[in-house]
Length: 133
Image (cartoon, rainbow, N blue to C red):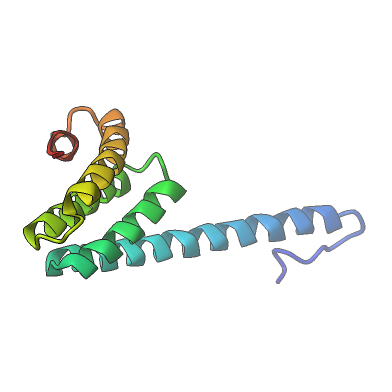
């Protein structure tokens, strides 16, 4: 505790600033770890396939991309999971698949566009931008 505890009068402000900085580092570290764990779960859902898994992965990646709009991977995977969800509704011939694909296509294009703007030399995001019905 010698790092934080003030040794002499007037060091209280320095100690307070150190505590705040330490707390911020801990908070950022925990938040980053949580995001990685969440993204890993979404990857598993995408790999598993199926409408419900795609929906859950889409919800996770859209949430992550909205929290970190400058993250290529989150925007790319949001676009990918949205596309897979829409494609799966068509594959299953659900009654509203055309409307779902229309709505999801526009939503997916927006995330793909963000990913493209962040990494224009990566072709991956272009696939989900152009692959809209």
